[in-house]
Image 1 (cartoon, rainbow, N blue to C red):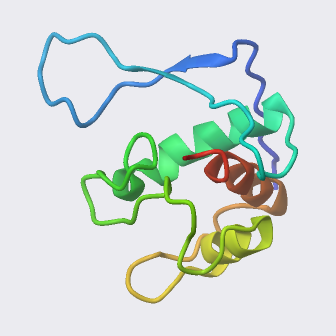
Image 2 (cartoon, rainbow, N blue to C red):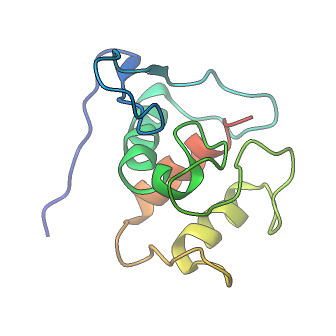
Length: 126
């Protein structure tokens, strides 16, 4: 199995907003958020990888900024507490095995490094 590596030189990434719906508007600029107090230490490259994974697989339900305003139903990830815990382990568990009521399991989609990168990014959302 071939491993993907994410090499992102810039800290700022451009993301097209799927919620604007208006043609001719410039894409929304989104930056990787700075490390939040209480979130686990993660390097910028890990956060960048988590950001890319989130935008590819999670924003449809959780919204562009994790605000819960996706095109499919999904809770906001900007809350101070999560239903199943706001720890690195709890977030990885939720992503890996899914949760009843709508969160699909991604354990066969993402490897351990990807799960850790995604959890690091999710924990920066507030």
